[in-house]
Image 1 (cartoon, helix red, strand yellow):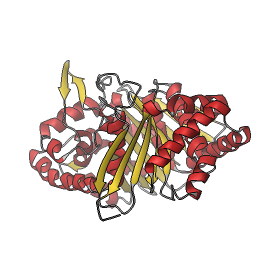
Image 2: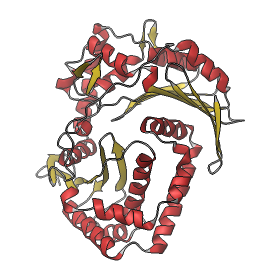
Image 3: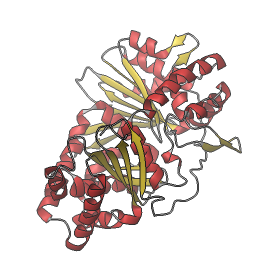
Image 4: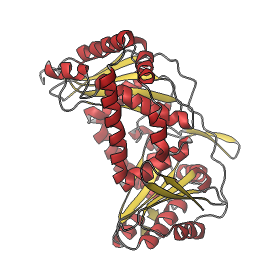
Amino acid sequence: MEEKQYARVGERVIQAQLDNGLRIYVALKPGFQKSYAFFATNYGSMDMRFKLDGQWLDTPAGVAHYLEHKTFDTKDGNALQDLAANGSSPNAFTSLSVTGYYFESTEKFEENLKILLSFVSVPYYTQESVDKEQGIIGQEIRMGDDEPETQVFYGMLEGLYENSPVKVNIAGTVESIAQITADTLNFCHKAFYDPGNMVLCVAGDVDPERVVAIAKEVLPQQGNLPVERDYGKQESPRAVSGTWEKEMAVSTPIFQLGFKAEPPQKGENWLRTELVGDLACEALLGTSSPLYAALYRDGFLNESFSYGCEAYPGVAFLCAGGESKDPEAVRAAVLAEGERIGREGLDEGLFRRLKKAAYGNLVQRLNSFETICVNQAMGYFNGYEYLAFPELFDHITKADVEACICAVITQEKCTLAVIRPKEGEA
């Protein structure tokens, strides 16, 4: 085990690498009663095509999410119930690139950790339970089909990307999940729920040696390297389509404006891409920006507006959206502001204020054990140390953010997705 101190953010982390390949991080929190554990696999909805035992396999959309649901099943019942009976609050999530299982507790931490590691690493999938789950997840998918925010977000991704599975709904479709069998779940578990493809992150007043000992006791002694994956043909730097539209039962148009960015490489570049992208969004669209003030004043935006930078394997994009009486006017204003920044640059005082505020938000988020654990896991999978962000953040300049805006906020890299009211419902 190795201790690493991050003086800028006041964090101490014990790190260990087991012989089976599992990476363990324990963020020490002396005096805190609460503990948090996050056990994650580098496997998300994008991982639909991969090589297992020397053979390429194609899986239906939604398998990673389906697997998350069924992994709580055990021979003796359900791990969610076992963890809750021990006084913990357990849950899980599937994203485009990661599946994570976690619990928060104030007592019986070691018992709960054993349960967590055991049910995630030991699959128990029967065809009967898999068939039963199709109705439950099918209902979840249909609910998503009725959510305008969900539909417009994936519409934006369809407009940006031609080949990448990033545009495929995490839950899949009713038709795709109908193809999932117990065998499908078993070989996906074998491929991705391997210690060499996973990470365990803990935060709390716990004994790191006990965390490592429990992991050694519960998990397989041997692990394999992560499997090879295929995310489709390389994408063009241009958006596939400039517009995407659909009608739904909404009273006001809902939009997502997306801009295609250069995909980051693993390592420090990945984190830097996200930090620069987030600052670019703040400078261009943040509540302190001149553009936001003008659009809000003129009634083109309201409190539903949000924005950010996202990066996944092979893709990265800046996006912003919400309700608007005229989404096309918002797009035109954003593109015009991007051109203006290219000509005139950002105001130095505004940039300094935005950067200071962004740094403060990053530090404040570390008050959350969940934020520490989840971001450490994401950093490990993408090749960087998340808690070292202050040093990287220091070296981001106004010119870096201006260059990002100039390179990304362009017509050819832009897609506007809009959900419009059905006729007579506006």
